[in-house]
Amino acid sequence: MKYLGEINTIGKAWIMMLKEILNNGKVTLYNGDKERKIQEIVGTSFTILNIMDKDPIIEKYMVKEEYEWMENNFTKLGKVKELHNANSYASRLYNYMNQKNQIEWVINKLKNTRYTCSATITTFEPLTDEKYIPCVSMIDFYVENEKLNMYIYCRSLDFGSKAYVNLAMLYKILKQVANAINIEIGSMNLTVKSAHVYQKDMDKVNNILSDIQKYSKE
Image (cartoon, rainbow, N blue to C red; front, side, top):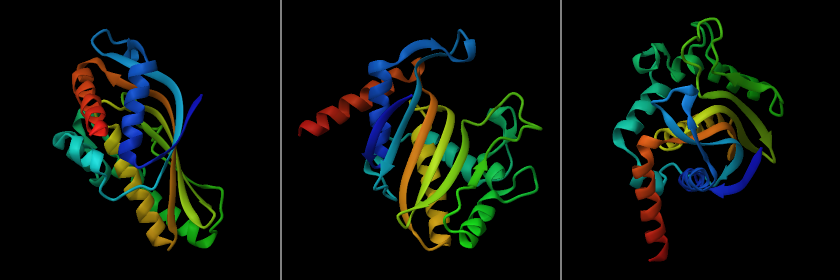
């Protein structure tokens, strides 16, 4: 596992991961599929600090369709046809297995026991998940130094396409929980098993990094 350190803002963390993948990643096949080549780093972690509601890097480089698709995934209950009709993240978080609002449960747990070590939720629905296993796998909330931090385990994140939206949506959940228990927002701490970029997105990624480098010199 390689720890990449602390970095300010989601946008800067996204760019850091793109650089890391392009500089140190290995070309492989995603799930052994010859039609889906990726450049991948296995085993990374990093911490995001000073997160903003409107991140200038994301605002500038996001793809509207990508952002809206993932935002819907995190905010609308129901099935996602592009993911083998699996349940959306919203369903998994707010209506888990049609039985439990996990975000409400976390809020109540932290209200009752502020310094609990077990304010932990999952997106896995093992009784029904078959063809699709969610990328954002486990989310843990922990109060440290009177701030609410989020610890996230991801089995896989596609940094060339939707990972920046995953991070933005996770921040919104962190903010929702922090506001509900009346505490300051701390950090987002991520562990990512497979951080990758699809070959089909390489031109887009290189253009973003080239523009970032040009902008930083001005």
